[in-house]
Length: 186
Image (cartoon, rainbow, N blue to C red; front, side, top):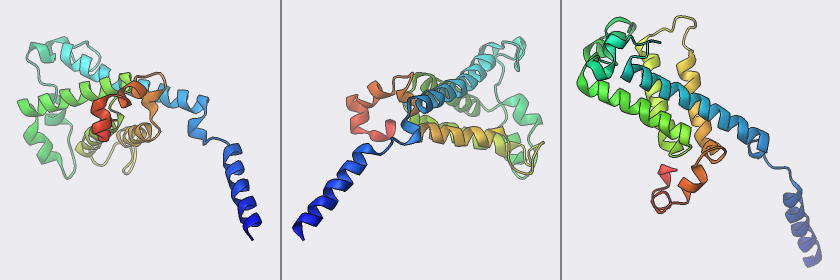
C-alpha cells in the first residue's frame, strides 16, 4: 500500500512539472497584455493632456484647464441623459469634480504606462469609466454596452494578469517595502 501511494504522489508531482504554463504566462500573452496596458494608459494620459492644455483634439485651447476652463463642465452640462442626468448636471464644472476627474485621468494613466499600482489603477479606472458610461444612458449604439464598459473590463484583466510586470516597472514596484506591507498597492 505504501508503495502505490508513493508512486501516485511521484506521478502527480512529475505531471505538475511537465504541465504547460497557463496561456496568460506565455511570453506572447504577457507582451499582448503589456501592449494593451500601454495603449489604455495612453488613452488616459492623452485625455489628461488634452483637457489640461487644450491641444485641440477634443478640448479647444480656449477651454484648457490651465487657462481656467473646466474639464467636466462642457460634457456634464450638455451630454448626460437617462436616469442619472440630473446628478451629472449638478456636478458639472464643480472644482472638486474637475480635480477628481483630472487626478483620476493622470493617476490611472501614469500607473498603466509605468506598470505600477495596477490594482488601484484598475479599481479607480473602472469606477471612472463606469461613471462615464452611466452619464449617457442608454448608450447611442447599443442597449447597454459601450467602450467604457469594455475598457473597465480590460483594466480589471490587466490587474489580474499582472500586466505591469512585462514592459513595465511592476516587478520592481512589487518588491518595494511599501507594496510588501500593503499588497493592495501592487
